[in-house]
Image 1 (cartoon, rainbow, N blue to C red):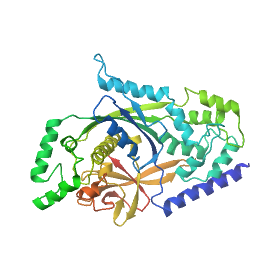
Image 2 (cartoon, rainbow, N blue to C red):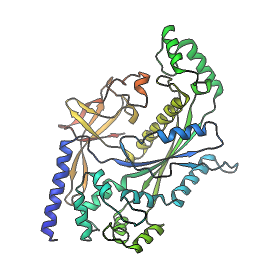
Image 3 (cartoon, rainbow, N blue to C red):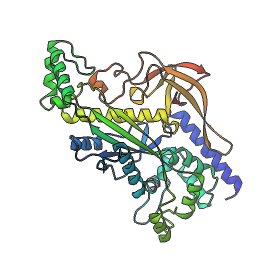
Image 4 (cartoon, rainbow, N blue to C red):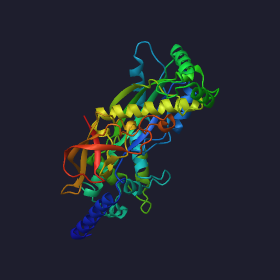
Length: 410
């Protein structure tokens, strides 16, 4: 293909992406997340926690990049080594011995396990690219420095994360019994809103016999270990040159080489975050499974929020839904609070066609207009659960438009 023709197609692709961004504010490139449970078979409530974990969805601000392995066993404790370090070693071993980096790459490219063929369809779908442009680039062997492939790697593949969640039930029988006693007398548990005898009787009858004293005070400690898939220009070039093939050009040698690759597709450990679930309202809960899922879901969400505050690479970007007023589809689940500050980012491309984000201002949530979008918040009737978006006010900057991205800042 002549250089002029290729540049014309690249310009058409850029215009197409920008048009998509202007037409649909909810279409933006998300980071991808693979969530795993580290379970403790010897601990109480292990079975229940494991069962509800399978039903906890990947947060909607991420693309689901789950692999088949969703649960792994914790390492038995040793007296000569702190349990936190034991589990961290265990998670590191899981990542390396199971070639998780290579598996994540295979998932990205829809690899056929029998033939070894790859496809660019998922990359194009998640990035809102024109899939035919990838075919052109690959057919012309334009790997190193190619704007389209580099942009897809930087924006998508390089923002693939693994979150391994070590969830442990906190045995506090006395606290549970006290919480149950308070609930029976007053009708409030950890922020519930029952305030009179009639409401109390109604609330208790709806909860049923499945809620024991233990479940009333159910809480967990969760330590979440965060990893990021390494995807540099050199790794991408090696992948496209040595392993990539589509269904029209099957090469058994490439299939075998990829299956045996152990060193190229690595992952970087970013850090860990421990969160205690604290008190949880019984509102919206009718069974013990409901309570366990509510506690675990909110604990994982909080761990994600805390990890994002520590690691800029892990922070999610969310589009403004409207500019007058300023609104976005995030809330308490993403850690939005009255003292939060968020930068407003404009999508631009550099001279080489790579995606860049330019700060154009800063916003803050409006008091009383923060959406409580946490799990079961509507059933709990918590403050802000009746909203569907969070409203913001401008702190600095120029004119904001729907579709511009926002991201929390310190």
